[in-house]
Image 1 (tube, rainbow, N blue to C red):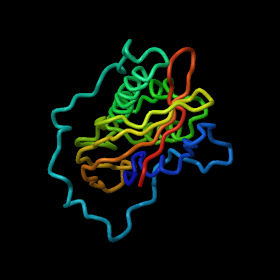
Image 2 (tube, rainbow, N blue to C red):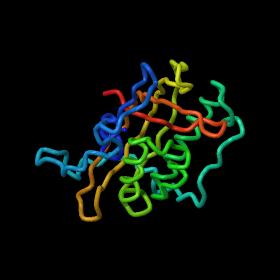
Image 3 (spheres, rainbow, N blue to C red):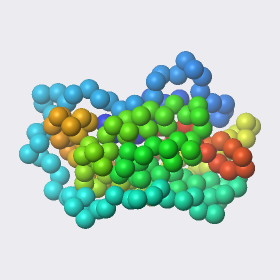
Image 4 (cartoon, helix red, strand yellow):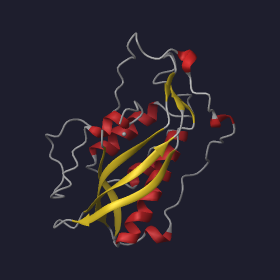
Length: 203
C-alpha cells in the first residue's frame, strides 16, 4: 500500500472514488499489485539491512483473528473497529500467506484487496518473503463520512516498522525503512456489517 513493494505502490493505483463513493469501474487500472520490478543497480545493497529484526521473536499465528463484536453493525464506531480488525487480517496474511480471511472481509469487487491478496499469497513471512517488523499498526482513523450510496469513506494513519522483503526465493533481500502512511478507504455494507470496498495509499 505506498513505497512498499509488498502491497504499497499497488494500492496507490486503486480507484477510491471517495468523493461520491460510487465505486470503481472495470476500466480502473489494475491495482493492489505491488511494484515487482527488480531493484535497480543503484538500490540499497543487502548490507544496509535495517538492524531491527523483531521476527526472531515473532511466531506465526495459527488462526486468523476473529471479528470483534464491536465491529458488527453499520455505525461509525463499528466502522472504526472494523478497520482495526482489517489491519489485523492484513498482518495475519503478511505472516501466513493465507488470504481467505482478508478476502472474506473485502468486497468481491475490491481490486486493491484482491491484488494485495494475490501478492501476499506468494510473498509472506511463512515462505521467507517478509522478515523483521513487517506488521502494520493503526494509529488513527479520521474524516469518516457517509455517501449517498450508503458507503462510508475516510482515511487512517498506519505505521510500519523496519522489515526485509524478498519478492521471490532467489531475489536479493530489499530493506524497507519504518514509515507512516495515510490510507484512504471506502467501506460498503454487506449483510449488516462493513466490508472493505476499496483502499489506496496517499503518496
